[in-house]
Length: 215
Image: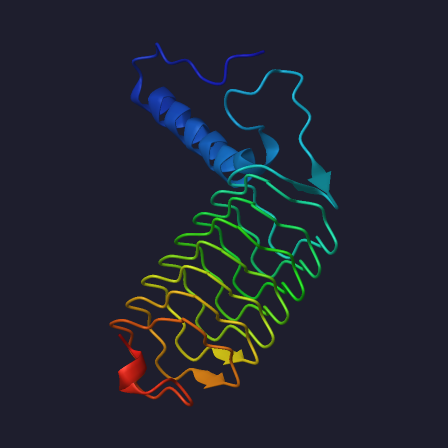
């Protein structure tokens, strides 16, 4: 492989050229490397799962990917960019989505029970009929998301952000809305057996429980 520049050169023009070339290469690696390189620690012969051109590994970059009906149970997608992805009826059972970006994603009827998604973002995501049974969703952002008919039984939503979200006809049995932001949300026709809302913010929420149910 030819040398990119002479690092031993003491000439100022040569050094400037060298730095410029290295910055160009670094920028190229930054924009493609996370998706093009397998996870660190894998063997040279490691072959990742690829679904419609999207490599399934941590920090993958697949905005707008078509992952409908994909079998992703247990997948490690920490920090993945799945903005606007189509995940209709995808199987994400027990997948790790910690810190992932799923803004504007369509997760209609997706299987997400036992999913681990703390600090993930689902802004404006469609979660209609999605199974989030026992999901770990602490500190995640669901602003303007649609949970119509979703199953959130025993889901953990401590410090989650659900501002202007729609939660209607959902199963919220034993769900934990602890210090949760529900400002401006629409909340109607939900099953609330043993659901708790301690220290949650209901300002402007349409249909949220009365104060006596906050504790």
